[in-house]
Length: 523
Image (cartoon, rainbow, N blue to C red):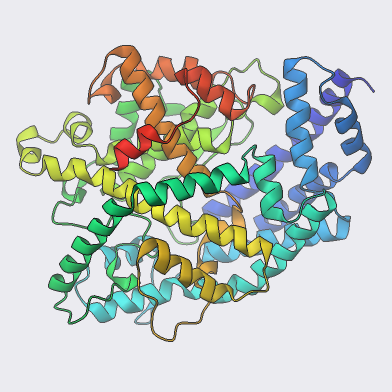
């Protein structure tokens, strides 16, 4: 079979199954109804069965490099997909069943505090606002209960994933996933080491100041910074300060602000919002995501919006993913009508998501008077750097943990998790704590070996902003330059997955990816 015929046949089958899978996943997320679990399982099993064909895998290996640019890129991306599914059909089916079962458990989980089931938003409200130490502690422990429900299932999944990797010639699943994401493992961990060292002084100063503020706020005798003293269950976000941005979004229409902003930069999102599910309710997935159902027109986001800074930033973030999907060249082959890389779509989402914390954005698009912002503007603008600093440390925990998890899933993972949290986040391990707190993070089960892409995305976001400002001779209000939308369409969106991500970033910014711009934003 020649290359065009093979790609035509494969694309037809893949497209049909992917649309079924994404619709089932969407319906499960918005309802929590287990009927969609079985639909999702059926579609995913069919996809994995397609990708598990060893004859097709051998054909792809033999023909890679023998087509034109677009054909070769499609063949390479297919090879990555096949490599992750080269095990026996019964094991593949078991993997799908486990993944969807775990996803359903996460979707339906509600932590219980004082015999009341809480939504994620309600739990975060406690960690953000409560001054009752006992209540904060109960909320934090309640958020970790999900780990006890899913940890053994995740470990079973880890063993199956490692079997897949070994079948494809890799030592473990972590190694395979990085290879398939076109990320060099040594370069990634060298980057993490560089960021740890470069930001150490800044981190130590922040932690010292934060610990003093916590000690004063709660009238504590010790300097022990336990995890229930931060503002979210994982310490991945900046803690609440006296300079909270939430009052500026109180009673504001978060959806309208996002709609008006994207329209202003010529990236209208009305069609996306019309198909989306934006507000919390019982049974609905409590997180946020974007999905392109057909890799063409049917693009949706899921949120659980409240009128605060977190959901303003999240709404802008998810719509960043969505506009990327929307403006990929529709004439590209189906298999290339996706973002260049996970980290590149994250870079666009983060570029826009940062604006929720930007005082000039709040002034211009949330219609807050500059006089109301002026007295705390300098403190607000510092918060972005603090947010990036905290998030970078959290990524270090996740990336180091996942690498160790797949290299040796038999080790004491509960201890490892807290060793890493203490090392990178400076949080104190709860006394006598020995529980699978690592399993309370959804990504470890449902988006494996993904987290490094958030950090790469933040680096790309800083580099893209710098490049746009330099090219357009813009300053701090770069985000309100109407040319931004067209610039992103031309530089990033239109090419889809036509080029490897490193090449795309170099084409867009005239430089290979560097940590320099990100470190400046962070410090």
